[in-house]
Picture 1 (cartoon, one colour):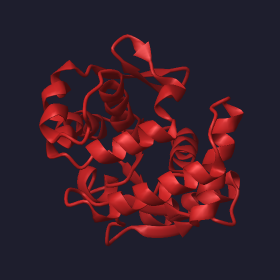
Picture 2: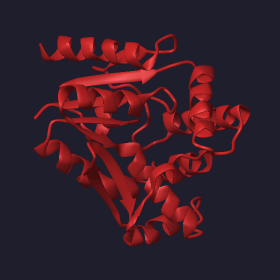
Picture 3: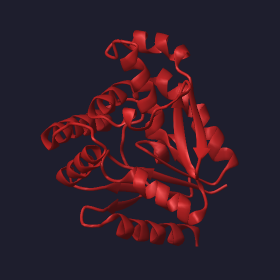
Picture 4: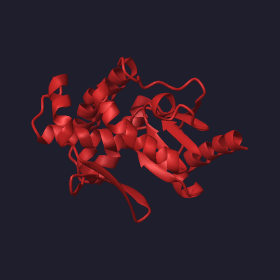
Length: 221
């Protein structure tokens, strides 16, 4: 099986790129960030104190996440609910960043991700795909852009969906999350040694896709 890992900070366009690559190559797209965000949404709705590691671990058995491929795209369900945009708010992003370093949370989701990669050609995006989830992936890309570019992209994305927020709020949350993710003890969000760095600050989605496809072709021959 061919595995392609797309890592990088939030707002760089990982999910958009991964979806486009999967469609172009006919691979399965796995949005790992959505899995962590779904756990975060469960914790928020349940009033769990996410600063309390023991409380988060104790709540995990109640989390029921399934992934379904509907209409050619991946949908994530929390129980019977398709979570959609509910997991894309700045608040849920912050909660996801707080709970994702917890080893028990990572173990809870790891088996699901690895099982899919073992049986399918996949494109998987997240923060530690190339370093932890798919360390043997044939292609690893670390996608990034300037903080200001990433915050503006996320602001436009959320406002177009009718989610009320501000650019300043998103930039502050993004900076905080980047710092947390880079410096966490468990699976820090850093580029794998064999990852190819791709800065798309000045690239639109189509140009980013073409640049990524060139990297993939060079790796896979």
